[in-house]
Length: 195
Image (tube, rainbow, N blue to C red; front, side):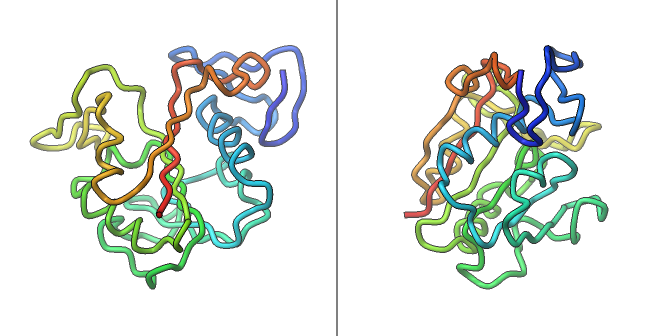
């Protein structure tokens, strides 16, 4: 086993809830290592300017060679408080936007996707990871649940990205050397490219 974020190597990752496997060194989750696999497959050099949305810990290590801005909708420990549907950055400010398990918490999702598209450079990309879909269609709740989830993610989730103008390439955990990096086979990362 090998962590593609911190470089740890050993016989096994630590077991966690719902089949999650944690790196004993950097505490990265399966989904973070999946994002790292997609990132390394997509980029031969690090993007210069990265916007990290709601990230902490091991996720940030993926982009340690880039200039990063961090924002959060609720937690100042995870970055400057800012509404994803009203970003206070100039158009074309970033080469890459990263948000893992954030979008399902966003009430104004379409507006947030427009804003992400706007702040990306042409040919820029966003890496999005949401909970594994358990239904055919995404459903918006009438109010957020106790964890702050506005959305129940469905198989049609990538349509949200396409409606904002992104070209979407979906990467599944089973395609990212899951046994070597401890990635859940049914994980999904959407690479959204601004054309």
